[in-house]
Image (cartoon, rainbow, N blue to C red; front, side):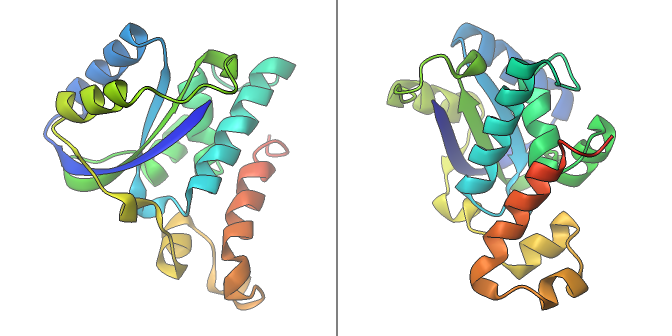
Length: 174
């Protein structure tokens, strides 16, 4: 089970937000990662990152001791937490935030996140659903770090593929 939710809201205190998110995820028995939506290309981007992170744990090749952090690394296309946070971590202030929710190591593959959990998440952090938060474009790819040279050789209809390639490349970065 992997759920991707685009939202809009304001984060006043990053540390408190992260602590509340951790508490919420433990209470709901979910793994939850919050990311800067302006650097996320699509739901497929985050589904792929989550699948790669889960596979890393299953194969014992994970770089962190937390599935949420492993998702962050794959979603950012980075191997270092500091670089990943700088690239796609949430910031203080008003912003679009995308959440990835999954159960620990995806044990319940056919289950969806209960709508009441999503409503509680939105209420806890005073957020609103924003489906437009998860629709990337060329600017999203540039924010992600993809160069004009890379983009010039790829047809626009394949832009989503370059993000999936960057996610998959985390496995070979040492």
